[in-house]
Image (cartoon, rainbow, N blue to C red; front, side, top):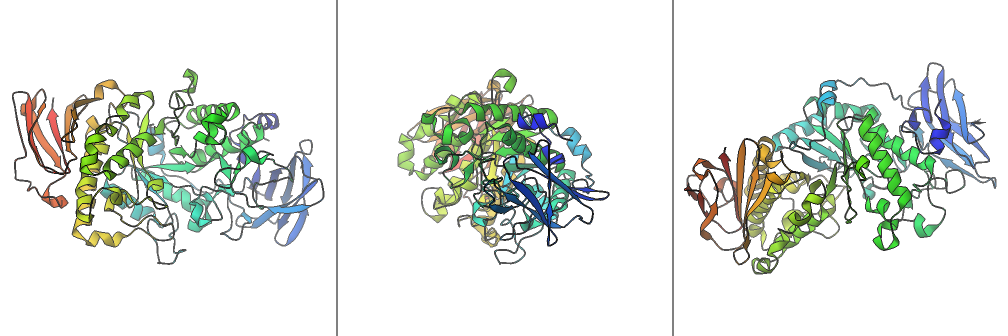
Length: 594
């Protein structure tokens, strides 16, 4: 039995263990929360079965002896006015493929994970490399060219493991997998918050995918949507004939995406959402949640001028603190573009309790800089240095996400200034800048092959690009850069300590040259960048132990489709100085052992 008072007051994190459809030895018990309903009926197997009001009439329950795993069902909920609407189960663990929308009975305990070694040793990666490959399951790879030619969760496991390992990613982040009716929403407008989308299979198929990834040393993060839900009448909207999950007034109840905003001041809504977050972490073994649109929780409608939504902020604090306690080693990341303070400070210290915050400012400044012409970059030089002015305020993660490659924005490679050939060297140099900049990393699928076509959820990535030498070389550059990031602790060990990063030179405005130091206990890495279209000769960097310097990576090497043979000497070191020759739009990474 669930703690009913705790549910009402927003203290429950496992409401799904009681609510929803649960397989028993003698059938299936169905329970739903509908406090303002006139009555509720279960629609199952062509039958209409009355549900009994329980717990002071706020909940409804029935047990069906003949029901079993895989059965379809829904609830017919009558409002006080007698009007009825058929709803899927808010706590349903499975749903039909759109446009159908009935819930499906699933057995929560019908899968045995084999990933205990991973689960016992995982961490928040604070002092470790965290290189995330963001992926939309329906369009990474497809069985057929048809829009519905999807792989099942478990079918894609081994190909995905092989690709992530080969490419140098140690975490994967899935766009939302909760059931949603519209492919074009990418999962951000949910109807079944507890149901893995049936596009790619069922509950155990998803668990198998995560299990396989873990057994191969790869962490899994889920994009989680705690702000809003789809308006479809069969889902949460006016579930019991009233605004149960949403605000009753449209001025705060309707989001900019045309969806309903959750009313986070209601304890029942808090229990629903935080149980949902815990459900994905506990039952599926996800290693973390990237929480979408947190600015809309912090401020009313995401608008700072409308003020802080104190109830929603309180909700996110309580949820984050308990999720961290209940799921050791899990990662909580906030997509937040506001300047609200202490997003990544622990709740016990007055913060929101996230581990990481997406650095949207860094992302926008970086891409705007590389969209500018070489001449304009002289004037915009400090767009690349500004991020370190505020960086220490939060624990930042650097994202080049799905949002930057859709809706007329152009892909990451397209955004580079100049013609087709000029874009590749700039992108190579930019990605080295990303890896050297403090903060964890995230890159959306297709970016690593130099995708030119904007992302379309109906098509798989343009893997045929690898047949073109320039794109294949770009992939191999990204692959090598990723592996350097994973194996050199200077690039991650002191991400959030002041002694892990220093500008060696950030005042070469006319030449568009920058040099950076990253440091760990065992090594120093020096990165030198030339973002101009001119060769820069005899550029000097003052570094102790310069005699121990060796070149790790040159973005202009010929094997990456650059112009410099690997045998050609591009720097000299001695007497505390490294002297470089930098090709246009190039970057070098130099290692110095302590």
